[in-house]
Structure formats: structure tokens, C-alpha cells
Amino acid sequence: MKITGAEDLNRIKKAGLMKLYPQKEPRIMVGMATCGLAAGAQRVFDLFADRARRTHWKGVVEKTGCIGLCYEEPLVDLVLPGKPRLTYGKVNPETADKIWEELAAGRIPETGLTAWLDTDEMLLDGGPRKLGDSGAEECLKGIPGYGDLDFFKLQRRIAMRNCGFVDPGNIEHYIARGGYFALHKALTTMQPEEVVDEIFHSGLRGRGGGGFLTGVKWRSCRKAQGRPKYVLCNADEGDPGAYMDRSLIEGDPHSILEGMLIGAYAVGSSEGYVYVRAEYPLAVRTLRAAISAARDAGLLGGNIFGTGFDFDLHITLGGGAFVCGESTALMASIEGRVGEPRAKYVHTVEKGLWGRPSALNNVETWANVPVIIGKGSEWYRNIGTPGSTGTKIFSLVGQVNRVGLVEVPMGITIREMVNSIGGGIPGGREFKAVQTGGPSGGCIPKNKWDLPIDFDSLWKAGSMMGSGGMIVMDQSTCMVDVSKYFLDFLMDESCGKCVPCRLGLKRMHAMLERFSKGEGALEELDELISLAEAVRDGSLCALGGSAPNPVLSTLRYFRDEYEAHIRDGRCPAKVCKDLISFSINPELCNGCMLCTKQCPVGAVSGEKKKPHAIDASLCIKCGACAEVCKFGAVEVL
Image 1: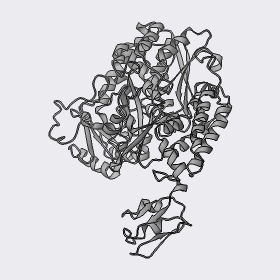
Image 2 (image 1 turned 90 degrees about the vertical axis):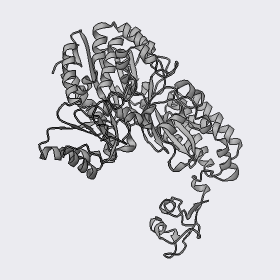
Image 3 (image 1 turned 45 degrees about the vertical axis):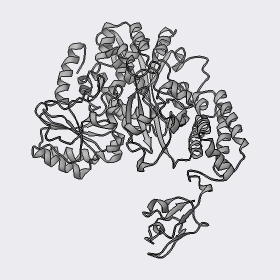
Image 4 (image 1 turned 30 degrees about the horizontal axis):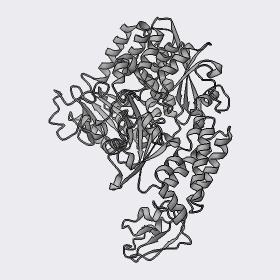
């Protein structure tokens, strides 16, 4: 299947639409991204595939990516001719069997039905559509549409436009939803400078953390002297709790390839690299298959669309070093050298990979490019805020009811993210803080949760956008412990090339370790701030420059917790082991023996149906007894 022009694209689009919207036979799509597989989607997929094979079913059982509803995984979508798209949540083999039985009997299955969507054009021009003349009003009575779900109401899908709706391994699905038409437009109707200008006027800023204007980067790379030039994709996602890039690759790899092709044409490149984490095996397989399919279709290689434009892509696997997310360390790793950053007095757009001009953007940035070229920069600028246009993907995780992948317009508030989209805090507990920007980000307290989420607002608040991790915390979280956790991660991930980062982070971590034990003096808090600022200002790369953010932000907003640890020898959140103890309230304990069985060191003793007790000299403060106690008898003091 070679694609040589618009006629071929339109022909494949027509064929792909017939597969996406079948007129005669149904389709079953199972969410098979990493989040779905972790929840048991493989068994669900195998069951449907087995039933279809044994009954010679004329429908199709396919895989799709993550639509973002991670809290509902495993997800199954049923597309019936003439009916809305039906989504089933928390599907296990038992419920999958019931869905199959109903479907085989010619009925719309009701088991596990979570929501419906009249079409899957739930993006770009206004979100999910309402149920129209689909003839399914009665059978879907009481079932919400996608547009009625709080999780989706405030979202706007651009980068994630195809995730959860297409089979990532089927290039026809991507083309059916408009894929590669923007590339054709750029190559056949626009000069490279016009492409650069369009991206510049869109206001697109890098989604990898730095927030640098993409158009400025491309313009500099295009003007730089030297050949060859390279375009690079940073898919080395290493933030704890972040999985935006992984999900995009697993759900819609061709959007990234198309974005890189357009970028290559704009800057004058004929070769590119995707630097992806080796710990993402499914993403790597999906990306390799997409590159192979694009080559077979003539969309990678020589003379693309007969325009004389040549471009090809390679994949480089990262070795799991967090610092290789930094641009110069990433390029050193591709070259086969140790992944260490270099000083930035020479920009990578001038001397990057192998000393040649290089344009590096992350996965999400590249996925936005085809839409901007296809829809226009003015359309894109109308989304978000003047200084932070478009949307941003966040992995909403932590102590929140609806954990998932969320794409929202820039400028949405933290309160809206946590309460409206995330459904608030589990158990009715109180929101305390949110940590944005990965391990190098900052913690923002509740009194600032009406803060708009954009590059500049987060920076002023002592945090940053980062790649898009968002960890929600409630009152059970100790901010001293949080700072220690992230600093421990960053200390291990530091390459050690520069003194401020190598030694400064260790010194900061040692101080936090002492504070968490109730040791130290209050005057040391100011010493910690001075040390953090020195590390921030003196480090070679962004890892060291942003590493103090968790410490500085928690001291800024939660200094009283640090003081309680040092002055009172007390952890207000009752987390730090050296400052807490466990006991059993005899008035609440009924002697059920659960805590006795669960204790790994035999610190709990007592007879059945009689109050138990904890031997403090044996207790290792693991909290296992409190977790299993159904009566609230185990108290943390």
C-alpha cells in the first residue's frame, strides 16, 4: 500500500471509515494500553477473540489505547451499526461473557455499561455529541453520555484526539480520522518557512517541561548552519506517577510520526530519532510497528508524496536514567556516550546531535503539530490562555477518586482538576496539596487551588508544568516526608557531573532525614533554604536547577510542619516513623485476631474476643495492623 497523493489518502480514509463505523457488523474494542493490561484487559480480549473465533462471528475484535478513564479499566467499547458507541467499565472475564451472550442474542448488553457516545468525534470542535437519531434512546435510558460525565466535561482532546478510538496498529484507522492530511497540506501547499510561522503564531510551547516556544526553536534550527539536521522526539518519561507520553505512543503513534515529519520539513531535516524508555516495552513495540507501516505506505523514506522530501526515523532505547530527559544528555546517549548534560552556552538547535543543528520536542508537542497545521494557528490560539495556548495532558494520580489521563485547556484551575474531573478526595478527606511538574516540581497548597494551571502561574507559585504529572495529596500526607521522597529520587538520578547537584542534594537530603526524626534546630530551616537556592542557581542542567523545588515550595507553604517536627518532635500527619507509635484502644477492640495475623514481627498479642495490645519494643511501625482493623481500634499516636 503506497500513498502517493491526496487521492490515495482519501481512498484509504473511506475504507478506514467503513472499519471504524461499520454499517453491517459490530466491532468490539478492548483498551489494551499498559493501564488496561495491568487491570486484566488481556484476559478480556482473549475471551472475546476466542468466542468470535469459535462461533465464526462476522464482527471484529480489536485493540485500542487508553482513553484516560484509568479508574474504570479494563474498558470495552462496543460499536454497533446505527447505534452510539457504548463503553463498558471494570470488565472482567465474567462480565465479558455476559456482554458476549447479550450481543450474540441480538440485544444491547447492559452489564457494565458505563457511558455512550453518539460518534467518536469527541474532540477539536466542541467535545462529545449528544444522542441524536440513533434509535437507542430507550435502551440507554439512565446511562450517561460521555458529555455528561464529570470526568470529560471540562476536557478538550487535541493531542489525545485518537487515543481510545483507533487501533494503534492500524494505519488506516489513523488516516480515517484525518491522519497524514496535514503532512500532505504542508508538503504540497506550504513553504517550510510558512510551516514554521504557523507553529510560531499558534503559541505552542514545549510540553516536556521547559515551556519554550516551539516556533522559536524551529526557526533557529532552520537558520542554523550545518548539515545534516536532525529532529528528535524525547519519549524518556521518567517522572514518578507520569504516563502521558507512554499512553500517547501506545494509543496513537502515527500522530507523533506525522508531527515529526512536518517538523523535519520545516527545519530542513531528513533524519530523526525517537528516544524512548526501554522500560516501556509496549510503547516501543507499538512505535516500531507504526514506523514500519509508515515506511510501507511511503510516508517515511524517499520522495514522500512525490514532493522530493526525504525523511526517515530511528528508535533509540534509553537506559532508564532520569537525567537523559535533559536535551544534551539525551543527545549524548543517542551518540553512545554517557548521558551527561553539557553547559548551554551553545544551543542544541545550532550544535546538537553529533554537533549538528537539532530540533528536540517531546511526544505531546509533536502530537499537537498536525492539528495546528490542519486547523490553523488562529484556531489553536483560541484554546487556553494568551501566554499558554492549547491544551495540556496530565496524569491525575494520588489521593483522588478518579485517577486517569486528562487533557484540559490551559488555564483550568487546580480546584476544577481535583474536584470536578478527579471527583475529590476519597473517603471525604480534606485536600491538602497538589504536586505538579514531576519530582522537580513544587507542592501547591489548598489556599491556592484556584490558581490557573499554565506555565507562568505555576512558576510564580513555586512549581512548574513539567511534563504533566499531577499528584494529589490529602491531610494524611506529611510534607517533610514528601520532600524527602522526591529529593531521594533526584539524588539517585543525578549524574554527578557538577558539584552543586552532586553534593548539594545529598546535604539537603541528610537535613530532611534528621528533621523527619525530630532532630535539628529551627535555625537550620533557613540554612536549608540557602543551600537549596545555591543548588538551584549553580547546577549545570535543569535537573539540579529544579531539584530544590519540592523543598522550597513545602517550606514556603508548610513551614509549620517542619517546625512541628523539629520543635515538638511531632509529625502532624502521623507518617514519620520515628515520631509516631501504634496502640490499640481496648474499648474498640473486639479481639477479631486480624491484626495478630497480619503483624509481620509478632508485636500484637491477645486472646480471641478479648482486647489486644501492641508491644512497642517489637513494633516496626509498618501500619499493617491499622490497615486490617475494621473497627478503628488501632490508633496512631
